Image (tube, rainbow, N blue to C red):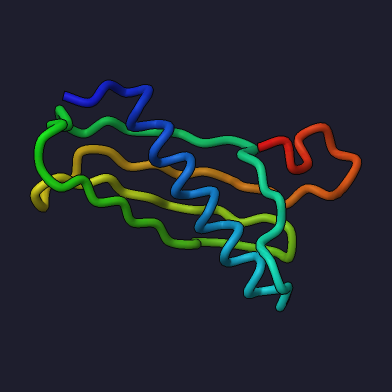
Length: 101
């Protein structure tokens, strides 16, 4: 089974990239902005097996030019194992997290 920390990391990362891609397209930028997680919440629905295909999906449910709210799902063999909702914010040069990773 995957533990909650790994599941949270997968959902956070996938959601953040979904937000960055969306914000890049929304503002017609050439590259994705540097974005950070402002907050996120994970709901563990059932044990998540480590064998089998793990599928991540995410969608934008609200956005402005510099932030996006994302809902994401982790499924295994067609069963929802965890969900996530989070707010992801594009930061500019000078922000402590700007291009730190």
